[in-house]
Length: 191
Image (cartoon, rainbow, N blue to C red; front, side, top):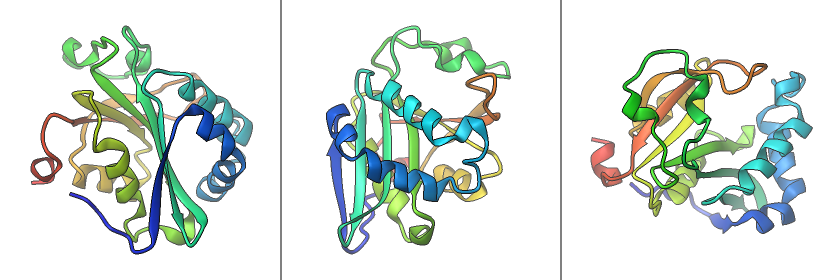
């Protein structure tokens, strides 16, 4: 399903392009995470360190969304490398086959964020669709806070399925780990 938000301009970026829009990305982050930014894990500097690490990975892509010339949101991720440590923080038992990474199998959707004033009008879904639409991987994964009910519900509506809980770093919160089958057309995933 392709979502259209009138006037929304989507633009893909690579790692170099991410650096060029750094201040705008950070401005959106400060707005989107205003309620969490005092927590050291969500601090702006720590966030940017994570982004730079993601941008150095194979398959990195960033999609920005502008309305009337203003950055209102973005989505980004990269392809998990072979033998990735992504799943090492999983807190429950799952089929071991789900955890095998070969460097081509899984796209990690690290962030979708939208400024608070522009939420619930389809921007997140448009960013999601733009980033996920032409992926070569067979599946995708993401982490979402369980208390973020709006995001969790949206991901389920878009075809994502929960596989368990994951704590990616010692000082990180516990997230819900979701996966999306990319081998099925989006229209069938949503059915």
